[in-house]
Length: 400
Ligand code: DI6
Ligand code: FE
Image (cartoon, rainbow, N blue to C red; front, side):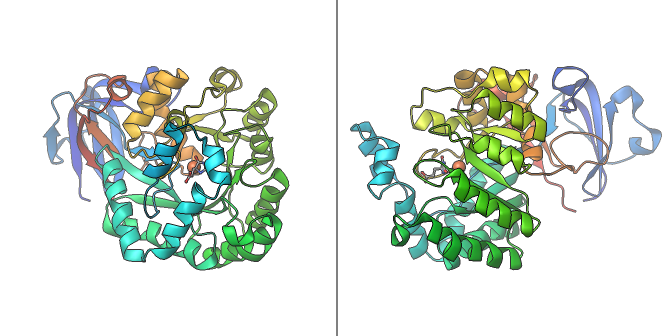
């Protein structure tokens, strides 16, 4: 990318410590070679940037491009029938225990070829990209056998070859026990999950290791076994924790210096304290809360009090969160969880970057990647305020 001067803008830098949102009015921003070269008030523009190709953006708001730091973007089929069953009275857990739920998506994903999986994933990626998203985390976990776990991760990585988007992959072999190992979760972990993790890592397909710590999935001891292997391979960990009950998953994740613990509706103060100490991000997923009609709220006030960074993501998946809109997730985080619009925006930028271990994106400052979103709004609070409006003017993706 050549040089480019974005002039006559307002900026929400999301750099903490100054104005709310890091808000700068009457600003300009200089981009060179995919990076932010300079940012600040127009009046202070350095003389050498003044001659760069300049665009008058008529006062539009510029933010860091958005980051969806928790998705299950690659999967086959859909679970509309399960949606119908839930409306007829069945619970998510009952459906899972009866062989539906995650396991039904596993069956479909195993049977579907890479090109079809990619085409489906691209429609969901496009919906996110259209809302200013430039980084998407994508998990495996609907394969639960070696071939299909690797297939999912390859498809996830191929999304970045088809679209201008950065993909980070998380290995989620410990997502559910597949039917062929029913009642034998430890054998599944030893015989399939860990060898698949090693093979995926060998193939260079893994950025982080995730798990689902829950009564319908894996115990803390089983998750710990997976985390030990992640550590041996030098991979960071994250965890689906305290979504349906409190098994102490977030504390376990924090003890392993996890990048994030995700969901967290049933998180208690001991888990919050452990996360604060470890610098583990709390990723809240209001789409799953909404879809499952959960009534237990995540402990937002405790997270604030202990200074745990909060991220927001879609959890885009066919079962508990069929949501491919990060702006809607931000709105839900405000309305359902009582986050402020500033917290919601930080949750889909700065803290989402932290949840992925990325230090070059999520805020606007010199030296950061020029992944930016330009919006037809006057104030950053507007981004979380509306439902079903997309005010994106342009997304800039740093091609480096
Ligand atoms: N928690 C979730 O919300 C998703 N996975 C998980 O561990 C749900 C996945 C699904 O229902 O297909
Ligand atoms: Fe999830």
